[in-house]
Image (cartoon, rainbow, N blue to C red; front, side):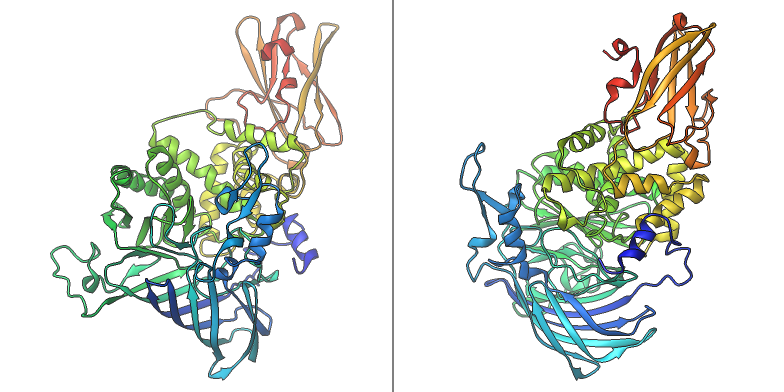
Length: 625
């Protein structure tokens, strides 16, 4: 990472957040593309006109493009990583051994020339002047004909050609569901430049970071193919296939191909999928957003893809209420790709035979429209901010759809995090997505520990403050690129608590939480419960004391470094004790009743604190059985 010292200051709260900084800036792009697809050999040609506005304070002498499809070739960085990592993604390898003694073969390594993916730039100029460029794997490095001064714009014109790879990861042709084309990461995409410098990361397997802008894309393809993806179809009445206005007589152009024109505003990616057997359904929601559903005409999945449609409308309403209003006119749920993956205005999801799986994946991927497509974090550098936040809110959404009201719907997440913390394979959440030694560690860190970051923050500042934090985060940072510090500063402003300690310990270290009820003593009719901080990471504590007469008492012990007290939950009576300083390992809690009348003392009875050893949270220990 460039400008390392500045990045560390920002992550740890030592510098002003970008939102508070009047010098905050972000780049802007406008893409116009014309694509001609040959569905027989899966090759395509394209022209791209890109207007790039330099809103940075720096004069730029070079730019970078991503050429993602070049990763799907033998010998690529993605191929080499698959062959090197101990636990490769099962979708991307063949196991030539056994389950007990696996011998993995990279599927990329055996691709033939007509099966690989590639993106090749054939010409590129800047404001009419030829520029020098060099292709290095999945990155195109461009030396500019003229530097781009701060506040100035330039226009790049490019000719390129590509080949759609056999489907291995996210993109590709003829996937396991039989979908012909999953067109994601398919075009030369300008890399992001921000306060950390250029983000020209090679494509190894993880996710993406893009520049906000507008897209105007024409896709010419065999007229039997039905498309869905990013943006709003502009020529629906010339295309048909369920996009036309009701009652319209579709007037398609003569010839073997149709040209689909999609436009999208204020997005940082463009994706699409196509298949001649797609069924296309659509519905208008109460908020005015049109939902599109494109799926194979397969009797094994059709019923579930029909069933998911009204539930998707409910998901939209839930996210609108609990995060903020979805600002675009449409969203498409498309069968394609592998697993599930989010893109601007759409998601590509495989399968559908299992309804619960389809619902859960749709809930997760749709939530990414907020946590990544609107709140555009750097998924490569901070994958936990999009995957974790998405997992947190989609868990709530699924609970709502199922009519459940669990006190702690994240218990499974806490258990999974605990497994990682005890495994010896955990790396800090601040680790770049490509630098995790194990895929398992990446997945649990990003999806699970990232989710626990939010649920545990609710424990620290209160659920109402957390909910307001999410609303304020949306209001302040939609259509921007927030960093971890930007989020925690919103939480601080909403709650009034000092929280940089939480961000630092939970994200930048692998410190764990472990608090214990060490013992109970009685002297001169005064009872003292001695509590101990066993782990390194500090926390405020909720303590419940139960008495032999059936009553109980709620006690709150503030953390000194927060300079704040959590408000009591509505209807709760509690006692607030003196602050606990992190440097003091033990804490004496004075109780008002004799030891003989105390049946149990428990730290964090609700289980929202990610304590790695809950066996010592209860005294006496037998009470935990």
